[in-house]
Image 1 (cartoon, rainbow, N blue to C red):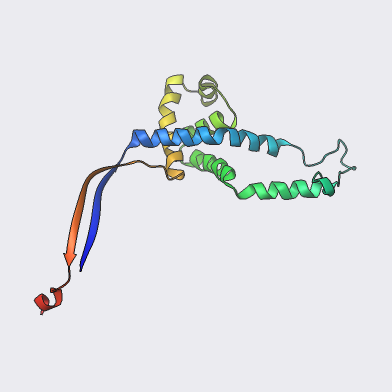
Image 2: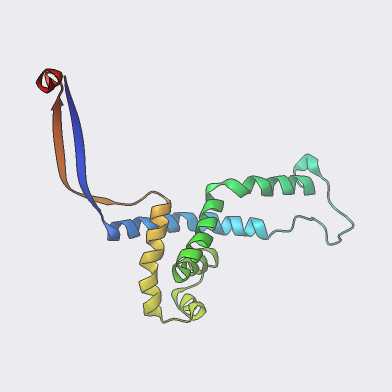
Length: 162
């Protein structure tokens, strides 16, 4: 009986990983904008705080609005939004780049103005931000340099040891 063990000598392809992170951000962008519009809507369907719509039959009631908002708290889009906050804690410029670009939909020049840096600096920040997103989404690309294969035979192992 032979068992085989494969060991890989790997490095991370940083450039490909950053591109994967950028693709994830682009895929999430429309979902993020849709979510932000939904979160910015008022839960109360009336101009007065005294009159509250309770049309639960059609799903327009205040109670159903609260329930719908609670359902949105733990999904992938919310996790991406939390990722942005987490990245801000680790790397403020990279996290704010993600926030301004994908949540606030700012241009590169607007992001540079908000971060108080040059456009060139923003272009230097972008790869770090995309790398964080790729790590979060498990899209890290590895370069396999060598594969080592070991064939283990335990047939006469005990006889040779004694």
